[in-house]
Amino acid sequence: MFSLILHRGRRSRELHQWRNLMKAAPVINLLLPLQNASPPFTESFSSTTTTDLLSLEDERKRKTFTVSYLIDSLGLTTKLAESISMKANFSSKGNPDSVLKLLRSYGFTNSQISSIIATYPRFLVENPEKSLRAKLHFLKLNGASSSELTEIVSKVPKILGKKGGKWISHYYDYVKEILQDQDKCFFSSSPKQSNRTRNVSVLRELGVPQRLLLNLLISRAKPVCGKERFEESVKKIVEMGFDPASPKFVNALYVFYELSDKTIEEKVNAYKSLGLGVDEVWAIFKKWPFLLKYSEKKIVQTFETLKRCGLTEEEVRLMVKRYPECIGTSEEKIVKSVETFLELGFTNDEFVMIIKRHPQCIGLAADSVKKKTEFLVKTMGWPLKVVASTPIVLGFSLEKFIFPRCNVIRALVSKGLIDEIPAISTVLTSPKLKFLKLFVEKHKDVSADLVSIFTGDSSLID
Image (cartoon, rainbow, N blue to C red; front, side, top):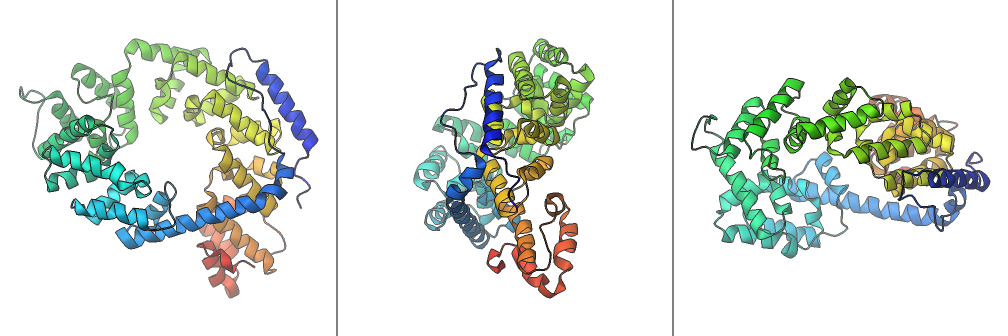
């Protein structure tokens, strides 16, 4: 079943061609040939599978424990608890208990604690005496009442992410001022009104939600503290049709506020020089406003790096239209991505196909790609070329999405209910209801067991 996994000879040839290509690229200075390359994918299976699977199982147990803890201790929804567990997880309740005890001692309710933890899951695994108590104590010493402290910090937990007492107090006062004024009506003609308060009022009237307003107050760029520049920026954004309720509205505000018209024109011209029309540039900007945050040098370098990966100029332009975030990907990360796929046995042509079909793959972490590819090929038996033809699956969560579906399929095969593993697209890209209809509801005699497997009980797999 695994005979289609590519052999060492082809892998070595592809890596050799890739290194020679990168060495020949004069615009790239940071690309170094691989040193002490790891064993090819086919040879590393036998030596790493057991360890990797144990590691995955340990991580799964930690996440399961974390989800249960958060649901039981704070009454979180399963969805929110699972989201937090993806960023910070633990296997015992000692440290998180200390964190919750500390926050409750300051008067935070479970709902307010949930807001803080959702923003900073890492607090659950850090020493609360070092990460939390000092900051909360500083705010209390500077005159914050218990009710003010809990309201403001829970509404803008990012205050706790600031370093240094001066900055924590500074941003705390910003937010406090706006919260106190939020029920009042301000007009820009008021002589006593600060720029910050007036500008926040303007954004509120436009429909920018409170959560985005409060985050604006603690940003380093301070786009709500100016006057003429703020008004000009907001006018441009509104005229372009940005939805005030969307984070993209705020992101565009950052860009227009920070960059001069001349600088913006220079960056648009950089994209024009690479074959994009002005209308196309602004269409991409509406999709991802940070498109104009990068220097002309960075824009050109990213285009050149992607071309040297094997993409044509037109393919690079199409990639930027579909996934503009790729402009911000470092040269090192792009090269690491290529090397990761080649080391796993994919050919250079297959790698090009992967990023053409699902550009987001260029930014995936190497360890994540390796774990997912190993599971899909070694455990499920899908050839590498099949994975390459459906690269969107590499962006799915291994624990939350791939395992549940694939475990159902493995159970069906082990019980003799289906003869072979279905196509990867049928298993992993079908809508949830269609998947359940095809592989769970259809087998009524064991549907209860299959549902249990689908929801996470892998012990039922033979």
